[in-house]
Length: 422
Image (cartoon, rainbow, N blue to C red; front, side, top):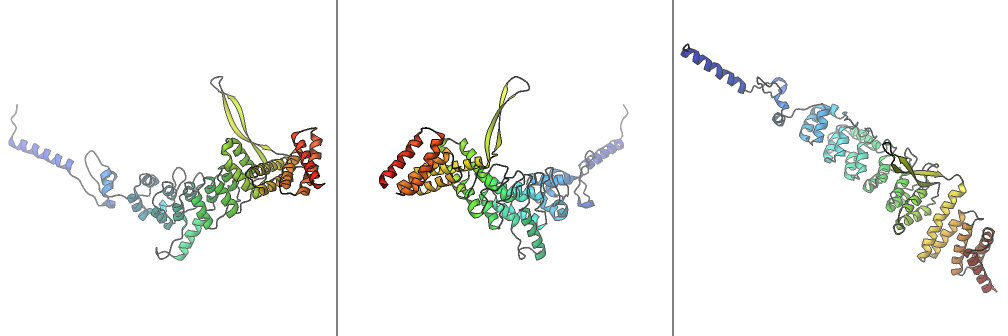
């Protein structure tokens, strides 16, 4: 083996020292203000690493980065990006068609970020693929403070912006409240659908009243309230908002139809709430239009002979006006019976009289209501008024039946009055 000289050995050691120092050396570059690490095996920018992003979070106008910041609540990076690219960021949309403002509201982030976006002129009227504005999302979960953050007017003393710009922003915020989502619901209507009473009260304070607007199906806020069996909401819409008790498309079920369907689904001891709502609706002149029925059908499975039962709702047309009136009359009669059981004879008689008004005067039902009303007249000593109802009731009853309990009761009442007047 050849003997190595001392010179050769020193040269090799020097070369090894040089290579190690290059591998371990971190180079800095002022190009574009980037912090960058240079190694033989890795040429990625240092600011792209986890540690690099901590030391120097870079502003970005990449939609994927911005919405990632929002998902992970990285507001430091979001603010840095907003300061540089706010014109790009306020126009960005994610896969659901949502703006940065949408996402802030959906995740219920701090109101200060919402106000900052509003100040940067992020459009409050922007609608996502469901037609929702940011305000729709606030109303959906009854977040009234978020709704205020989206609508309150900026003060000129708080921010150095012109009065004209403040007015422009505020007008857009107000316009957003009147926009309809894909099912035709404004924020007011959505508040009624989801029973968001805090937001509803705030919208009413803003003099917004969409109680009689129809959704794309032809229903109104009162339909939602009755469907929810929410007496307080029904009362608010009727008393405060002056909702039409017979509003909505005339070829769809009325609020009274909805109430009667709801009550039929409840157990007898759970129908008090429905009775109270019915009384309220009838006091505002609500009428029947269509009967709602549950339709059950059997369907065979594709893989075997097993049958599955499917259930749907169907609206059965009430072709004759008389039939709709009879349904309304029955509602009044139920109320009359309820008041009578409670000892409120005056209210009972009033409802029996309403029932008679909505019933053809040649039917057994009219005779029954007339008898109930006449008996109350007799209780008050109003014999002549009672007799004027009993005599036609007896005549009608005998036309339909030869003998019945009602006929016997009517005849007995007439005989009693005649004996007392002789």
